[in-house]
Length: 224
Figure 1: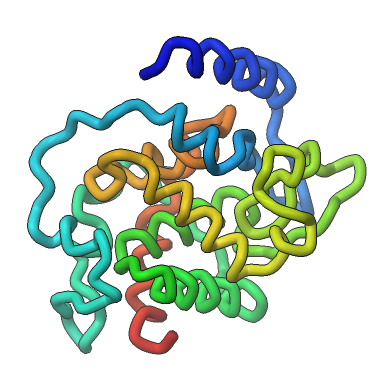
Figure 2: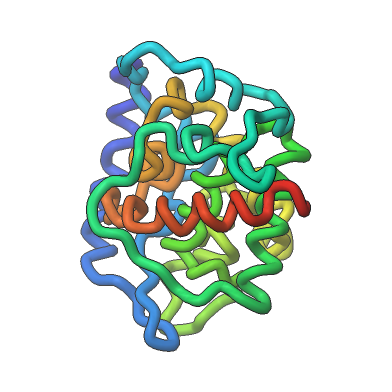
């Protein structure tokens, strides 16, 4: 990593970590993290990933537009959705109404971006943690800085205007643009890939949503 770039980036992350000591409670749901750095900064800050060789199923996620091996009932196979399995205890929430519509929007935007099911799982899991799949506007005193939308992206960090960030297609595309710039994201556990983009003060919190994210993408992929 370029040491000059790192020296510029680290103080911002340290400052953010100090500011974000507690999670926000909104309607009984905890919203933590948020997209601290803008897409370019997050990608530049991500170190090269020295993981194991990419499996054939994971490599397909580099741009297969969803031409995947199918599991039971024509759904995407589990090894494509969660190639490394889930990590730690898993959480679940009810996903209906607006939340269900937002899952469909994320999956549709992922397909439009030319990415496969694994990218959709990472995006849905990230949104589950950041906003509980709700397209949040500004929450006043409860807001995490100027974080908005499904991925709690910040206009002040270069993610886009408030109107753009609160558009599900735009915000998903912006997240995926950052994800694609993370070397080796296809190999990473969901929580690691999400953290490279979001630069959250709670980097391990994304892991708890991988199982539900995989189920949501499996049930939505062929209908979006």
